[in-house]
Image (cartoon, helix red, strand yellow):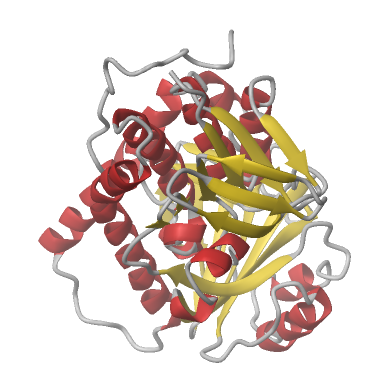
Amino acid sequence: MTEIKVLVSGASIAGPALAHWLHRRGATVTVVEQATGLRPGGQAVDARGVAKEVIRRMGLDAAVRAACTDTKGAYSVDAEGNVLETYRADDNDGDGYVSEIEILRGDLAQLLYDDTSPQVEYLFDDRITELTQDADGVDVVLASGERRRFDIVVGADGLHSSLRGMVFGPREEFVRHLGLVLAFFTVPNEFGLDGWMYDHQEAGRWAGLRPVPDDSQAIAMLSFPAPDFAIDHRDLDAQKRLLHEQMAGFGWKTSRILAHVDDAPDFYLDQVAQVVMDDWSRGRVGLIGDAAFCASPMSGAGTGLAMVGAYLLAGELAAAGWDPAAGFAGYRERMRDYVDANQEIGRMHVDMLTATEPGPEPDMEAMNSLIERAVNGPDLPSYDGLPDTGPLTRP
C-alpha cells in the first residue's frame, strides 16, 4: 500500500487519540501543536458509555482507571453548606452525574501522548500558517518555515480552532455562545474535601469544588450568566477581573475560592459555547473534537466525543481506502446523532443553570431517550479486515 501521510493539528485529547487509531490503521502520522509542550492540569473530564468501550479497544483501560480522580460522588449544597442532593459515582452503572471514569484533562493528555509518541511524530511550538489542497494532497507551511505535503489534514485544535478559520470560515459562522461563562483553576485544598465534589447554585450563578488525586489541592469551578461576552480568550487579567466582579457576594465558600484566583497556575475562563457545523470536512481537510462539534463543558461529553470520533474517523478513512470524500462522509453519518444529542444536553444544562424560575416538569420518556443517545452513542464497527497493529501501549 502507498504510504498515507496524515497531519493532525492539536495535541490535547482528540489529536493524540486520532493519531493512535490512524497509526493502527496503517497511516504515517504527524501531530503539530502550537504550545511548547503538553498542558498540565485542567478540568476533570469524564468517559461514559461508548467512550469507555473505545478506551478498552485502545488497550488503555487499566492505565486510564489508574489515573482517575476516584471522586466518590457529589453533594449539591445550599449557601450554608447543607446537603440538598447526593450523587454517587456508581449511580447509573458509573455513567451518572459523576462518572466512574473521571480523569484530569492534563493526565489524560499525558497518557495519550506517552501511548503514541514512540510511533507518531510530534512537533511542539509550531503551527500551520498556510494550507493549500488539490485533488491529490495538501501542501502545508508551518510557522517554523518547514513545508510538507500530506494526504489528509485534520484539525483537533479546540473551540478556537485556527485551522477551522483557515479552511471553513470565521468563528462567528460556527461558534454559538450559550450565555454562560465558566472558569476553573487549581486551589489549595483548605476546604477539607475528602473525595467528594461540592457545588452550590443560586439565581443563575454556580460555584463548585472537586477533589483531585493530590489531596493537598482541589479544582474550583465558577460560572455566571453573560449574554454578551467579548473578552479575548488570551487576556487573563481581564478575565480575572470579570470573575471577581461577577461572583462577588455569592456566598458559600466563594470568597475563599476567589482569594486564590491571582495565584492559580492553570487559570481558565471562557464562554460556554458550542460549535455547530453542517459538515466537518472540506476536500482533504477535516475537523474533530471541539474544533468540529464542541458540545460545551455543560454537556459533560467533550472527551467522549473526541475519543469516539477518533475511532470512527480513522476507521472510516481506512475502510474507504483513504479516499477523503468517502471517509469523511462515513464519519459524519456515524457521529451526527451522537453529536446532536450531547449538544442538546449541553444547551439544556445551561438553561437549567441560568434559570431564575422553576421550569416545567420534563418529559421523562423523551429525556431518557436523549440520555441513551448521548451516553451509548453510535454502534462501533469492528472494522474487521482493516489493518490493525493492535494496542500501542504494551503491558
